[in-house]
Amino acid sequence: MRQKRVTLEEIAQAAGVSRATVSLVVRKSPLVADHTRERVERIMADMDYVRDIGAARLRNNSSRTVGVIVPNLVNSFFTEFLSGVEDVMAQDDRVVLLANSRDDPWRQDAILQRFRGHGVDGVILCPAVGTEPQLPARIAGWGMPLVQALREVGPPLDFAGADYVAAVRLAVRHLVAQGYSRLAFLSVTARTSAREERLSGFARALTETGITNAGVVEADLTWEGAAQSAAQILALGTRPEAVLCFNDVLAAGLMAGLRRAGCEPGRDIAVVGLDDLPLAELTHPALTSVAMDAPRIGRNAAGLLARRLADPAAVPQRDIVAPRLVVRDSSFQKV
Image (cartoon, rainbow, N blue to C red; front, side):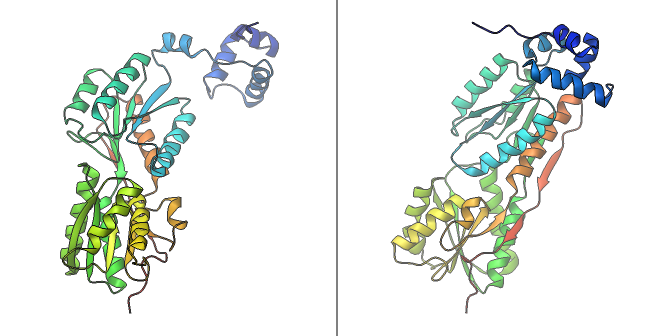
């Protein structure tokens, strides 16, 4: 038999307070004394009370939900990013609805329409490859607050990300300090703002340091795609002494591919990644990487959305996380 939903009136009667007081406790109002709040919350737990979000939405015109769209759920960077989003939204008493666009703009559009149907209060979007620059304006026309994260399209809006240019320059300077003079870059085929920023950082760092560009090789954003790129890298006209990779997933795949080709990473050729995922400590050799702090980027994105929901007229803001080099065994000192 289905259990009847507990009402605020029943909680109030059991706690010996008014319905208005219980409502304030549910809404986490600071107007309720601590001892009263604790008693009401204890009774709510004992009676298995669950807030009726549907009714609250009708009263407040808010679903207390936000949508988050990421391009994949395989890369653990996005898992860490999402944990940061959820941390902030939970404090704001909001539920996060997660969707995977699989880097497909058509699928992304379908997800956005479903989010509209569910009445989400706002969206955090990492745009799929091929997203039209007009999309943010379309979303604004729906009255749906938007924060872009990690990638961006269209005019400057609320954005949370990392300084990819600085990250690549940091990695290149490290390799130069380790004695390397011929560097290659393992990029991705997908055209995104994140890709362009990394390539810009690589070109700028080469100019600043005066070292040789051994070439740029592109691979699918998968472990196997990176492994297959090893043959191309080893066949470059200028044999690289070190390879900087788009992210840690590509770096790990590349090291496996190099090893298959009889080239030992960390001894015959240095490899550096970007992101500093937990994976970086598990590769052999352990991967030198530039940390981007995915959870913090997620928290920043959620904070920007909470700010936008509180003040729709606020000036657009960008929160950019500074990179941090983490040196391990894959970028040995060249002798």
